[in-house]
Length: 343
Image (cartoon, rainbow, N blue to C red; front, side, top):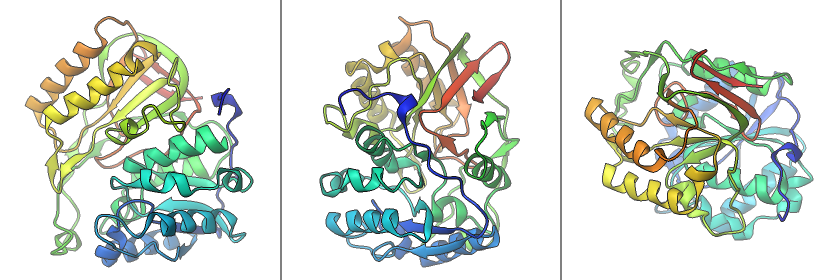
């Protein structure tokens, strides 16, 4: 899209109690691999007052993806055109949403605007729906990872989901959660069903560089952002409040920092760090104190020529709980007020 502007993104209608939520698996097939998580997630949404409908291939598992790229694209089309479906939630991320892009009818999506929610590799679809269909989408919880939490979805995650998707007004201030977790409980052995994960005290926001800035909220997960570099689906992040979500490297493992460094270098070569108005780093999955120190030095290396504020430890992405954020909406970060706000 030649003249893309964040303020032209279409807001989908709000979610209401009694609405039907459609579930798709545009990337990994983990809903089929872990049916107990999918069933728990659906049960949680039903307890919140919604109906749940799985797409035809949402519970398929075909190697490292849920189904063929054509089938996954068809599920997306079906959910956008189904009159009884009000919102679409992705079962989980993965690493292969990029395969479906060439099969998507973006005019169809543009003409049937709906809430579209997910994180991690769903980043690819957020970029594509914004740039090609002018649809405002939402970065937030997935079915089996967040709503499938045992014994129930975490209260902070649920509250942000409802506040963002069930009201038309501004989201307002995003307060840090009081506790967080990235404990890994093996889903294969159903260790996750034996009790809640251990929570840690959350020590609030950290400001790696002071200052204040406003702009559209944009960003996503590394390396899914990087998949789109140089394609027509890329969204120019100039003057945005850009966020980076750092995922796992494998089940229960953090992403090797050597890999992360190369992905950050990609963004640097794309001019991202030079062009943005502010930076938010979500709490990385499974990082301890030493990894966080290394991360901070890496971020400083790529941004030390610029003077925008940098907020660390936001509840965006791969640790729990997480926020639901309307992408492209106007955001403000201010170190002096310890503020992260969606206007």
